[in-house]
Length: 259
Image (tube, rainbow, N blue to C red; front, side):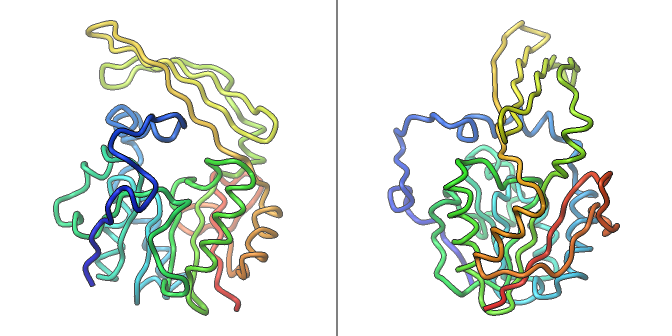
């Protein structure tokens, strides 16, 4: 099975399109640099545990959605050579190891070029759910449920919203690899909003970037999943598989297609 990226116009893109959404502008070299602590070892632990909890990920087509540079996908493909990835960012896809390139698609997750009922698994690592409006997020989860075959699995790695609300740091400034990053964080309505000013120390060049993610409590995620034909198999609070508690750093839900 070899997947070729479809023409951009079939996915609703054009080469001259104007970028307006925060997620279209942010996932670039600076993002990769600032989040470099999210490394291969973390991915190895996360994927290894997921394979044990959801062995369906080892057979048949599995989509790593919002795969970035493919750190999870590279490990997943060691167990399943039919695993493939999709991401919107040309930059992150271009950073993927050469061996992954034939298995990478560029596209918007709201318009997935995948037939219904063909996937044995979908993985959403490091909170790529919640980028859009509430209506679009709900529609996306319905679509993901429709792409899975019967008893296919969905692994959703999401933030623990209650812990986040209790421990949010409103403002800080750090320096990382020659860049000073001033971050302002707030919960605005039902979204986590992070505004960052990035300044290159060598030149003084500055830019502003934004992250905005809809915060869904676990109960609401599960209710949305039920509407998508999914039932919860297990919840974990860490990539290593620890049980979820109110102090867990992550909320990792493993769902299976019920019908």
